[in-house]
Image (cartoon, rainbow, N blue to C red):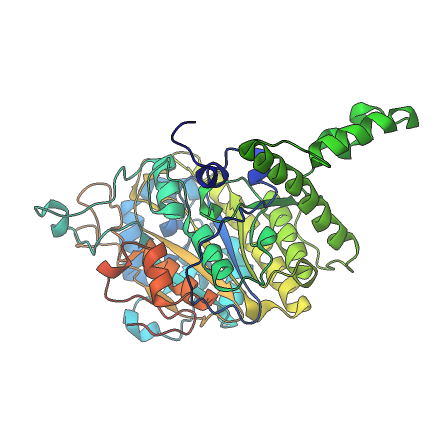
Length: 478
């Protein structure tokens, strides 16, 4: 511990995984002035689709020429779907047509969603959902010729699940400490000292790096409330009889660190953080219990349950005194090397139904204009199939929805599936991203309230791209 000072100890998260899940914030913040706009309430909700969502099996070309190109690249996969039977969800006639207001940007080309995504298609047509095409990790703009250019800067460890998940979340490979979701919340907290830091970064899923901030710690919740202390909060563990109450009270006092008098600074800070974690969890549950609750019925799926937790938290944000929040949820199962026809449609149904329920809840609460939900995934998948599945790709298409979204438009680029074009790698038909993760993030961050300097600090490669704001949240596109 010779090289570790007290500030680094607190920020390192050395206080165990429980602390990371209970929303503890170090009080050792910088005195530097920040300019993030924190007026009103705003929330970002990230859904991470782990495994690599197949973008070309989600936003599907519907004009005959483009559809035929994709069909020829995926004969095995389309055969497994039973394309040509007239009843397949991937038959061209059965794709749900999208009617973007910027259709002229794509000439005669058309796009559709599979019938499993009815809810998302309805939100798109309402003008409250945008599609951002061909997003992926980039250090600088890239095309096929650039891949062999001397000095070209490519993101490290492409096509690796863990590394690309981390790159999307933190702009660094596995082992990175801080995520850009955490950086956005940090900027808001530094800008306004009146904000409650305990519930600024909320995960309804795992404690991934996306919500890891230099100043804050993510708070973990679930459909049943905040993460608690099992030995104290679950009476059956120690025994339900009253004779165990004294032991339970002593244990509660221990985990809450009531009256802890340690003189060592490291031990005292650890104890304070641990105790505050318990207190924060109970304060959250008290706020939830005292609220009227949400009335929207969410689907009984993992993603449905997680988004219900997010909706619950947003419904009590006034009680939590937190008007800037970043949320994180996830879905797994998108690594569809085989059996894609049996896996992806069900995942698409679950995603669409959960987002639709979430929108209904936000509209009912009157907060839909204040919330922006967006998807991420470590990569798209190859255009060329490998039978009834696809391999790891690079760029992919994503959804952004909310009452402030300039929807019913396709941003970025969805290239014609001509595998000889400069938008694809020379093997497997991997999409070379047109839009960087950092451009995608900057558009979200600008709406969240960050200024140009704060965005540049959180997104170090943003300066390499001329377009800083993609426009899907009404910002400037240059």
